[in-house]
Image (cartoon, rainbow, N blue to C red; front, top):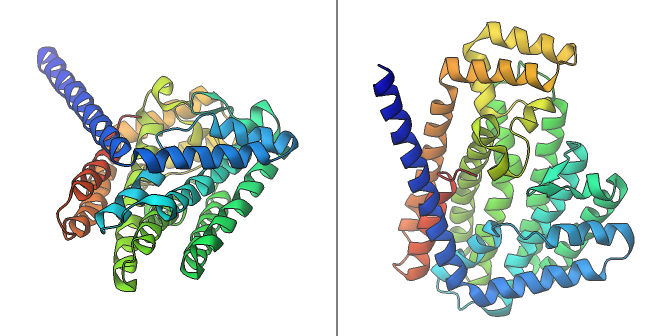
Length: 347
């Protein structure tokens, strides 16, 4: 029996490695296809951060110095190209807009969550202070709307809608902090508001700058909102079971803040006993170790991660079906690969 267990464990590790390599290849292909646009995005956000004064500017620069994978601007550019857009300044501006909003949310999130780490290093809130992180994030939002104004009324309207949804999702999540009664469906709705809204904006701006008709902008926006849900479910699963070194933050960081993610809500719905235990642990201000034991046990016992993964796959499949309906092109092929890889990544 032990031998069989080892074989299964080795198979899972091989699959994880294959998935990581699959996403890495898709990501690299996207960077190559959009090399000029991504270079423009980086220059643009670096210039913005450099112009911001004082500690707020320092907080913004701390984020721009750690560019991450640039997933959202890449998606914007890939949608633009897949619809026949030629790239250039408008595409670069649209891609920069979503990345600037994303960076602003990271600065704000780290204040709300009291997060010590971001992308494997001290967060701006921890390194410079909450006031600097909040004001730096505010300044980035203002600049993002300035960029949207340059792109036209449709871009302004969609950017404002995305910001409204993002804030609403944060408000609901904050209200539910420490509430072990949160339904899995409500946690899923928060995924759509927080992460889905920005992914939706990526597709909408890519389509708008490519000259896509309103119906196509709407269809792609809805499809990419579902991709955002899948992306967030994957993030939440990694927070419950991933590796801190590859994630760049503590495993279980959200749980320690009282956030009940979709996979955890699924698990708690299946086990009222663990729900009671976690409620008591929150009330008693339990240690990180105790919270970790409870969560690890309920997740393993209920098989909630497997169900959450099925949900993420279902959402991704809905997105890829819409992309497959676009005219064949190199951009469409790379876009499909990136979207599929996003929910198979290991960090």
